Image 1 (cartoon, rainbow, N blue to C red):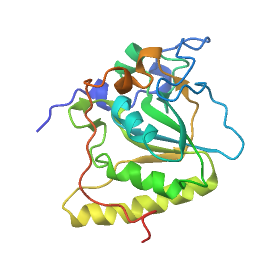
Image 2: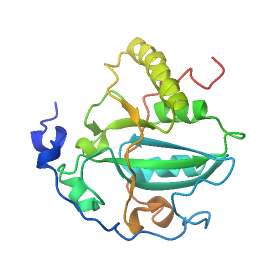
Image 3: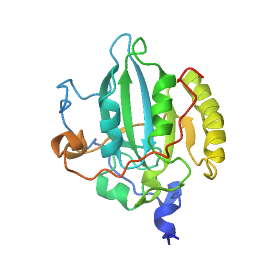
Image 4: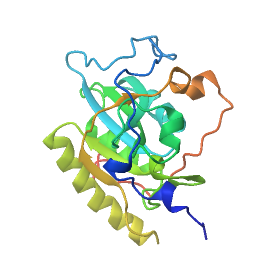
Length: 216
């Protein structure tokens, strides 16, 4: 059994959260893999999604390799602190999750299929951790940018939970909420595993396949 410290695995109250700062922290100007501008712009015809699946290094690599994904970026979302740093987020006192923001072409890959990739590449039953990474910043989360995304995400949670239960897993702990503000992570975190191919990646799935987006 794991022994968790309450200050790392319990969401911080807004009044107790770190204050942060008004100015965004510096980050990379371009995507290290594809060279595209690293910003929040969504080109015409594109859509956007955002996920938390544990350490964002490995999660981002999963998504930038997918056909139809135009741009990926890592950052912090779902907490209370404005423009947090990585060190602040690691204290558990910002309330933020490590997330990956994905800009994609819906004519090439649907949100349904991105959702299936989300469910199949981590364990969404672990609460405030993912593998050996422990704390609120590693929680499972889907952050919806539209009512349609919210509906798809909630339906997929029900469907995948049934398959996980049949495979012996516990309850799904994934939070599904409208997309909160996204704060860029520091330069060195962006596309980290492209810059450091032998770097740490603690991301791993359950082996259970998701029916959503797979023709079911």
